[in-house]
Image (cartoon, rainbow over all chains, first blue to last red; front, top):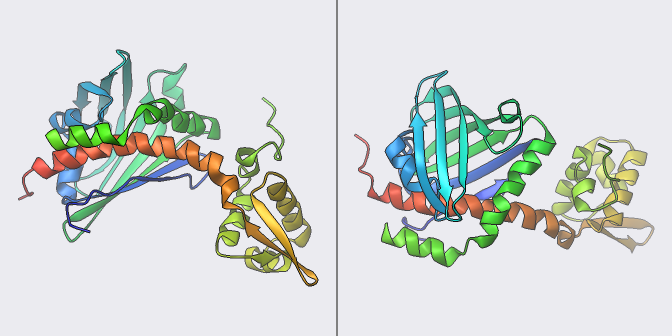
Length: 163
Length: 110
C-alpha cells in the first residue's frame, strides 16, 4: 500500500445512542484539524460530491457557535449548527450538533467528539457522535441512507481526482 | 410507543446489550451455553433466553456435538444491519474522499 492510498471510513454503533466513525488520512493532524475548523477548507469538502457548501460559519472558541449549510444537488438545503465545547488544536474537538431539518431540533442535539491521532505523518480521526436517545441515533444513521444510495464510488473518484 | 418484540428481526434482537455481547463472543468462535456463562458472567437461564431470541431471528446457528449444543454466529443474519450502516458509511466516505484531495493540497504545518 503506498502512502497516498486512501483509507476507508469505518462506522460502528458502540452503544444504542452512539455512532463511531473512524478514518485515516494521509496528512498531519494539524492539517486535518484545520480542515474541520477553517471555513474556507470546510467549504471544499463537507458537501462531498453531493452538493455545495453555501455557508460555513465558525466561531472557534469554547462556547462559540458554528453553522454549516449545504445545498444538495437536488436543490434542497441541509443545515447544521452547534456550539464548541472543547478545542485542542490538532488533538481534539468537541461540539454540539443540531440538524435543523427536524421538529424541536435544538432539543435533539448530539455531542460530537473528534480525536486526532498522528502516526508517521498520517492521522486517524475518531469521531464519536453521542445522541440523547436511540431514536435520534437511528434517525441520524437513516439520514445518510438516501445520499449513500445514490453515491457511486466512480463519481467520487472522478471529482476527487480533478480537485 | 411500544417497542416491537425482540424476535421481530435482527434490529430488535440486537437492541439488548447482553445479546450484542453474546454475538461478540460468538464472533470469535463456537461456544456452548456453559462457555458463554463463564465468559460473560451471566446466569445460565439468561444466556439461554438470549440465545433463543438470537436463534429465532437467524443471528446464531446451533449444532449438536455429542451431549453439547454449540452455538455460532450466523453472519448472514447481520446483513440487514450491516447494509443499513454501510449506506451511512458511504455517505461519510464520499465526504472524506473529497477531504483527502483537500489535504493533499495543503502545505505541511510549520
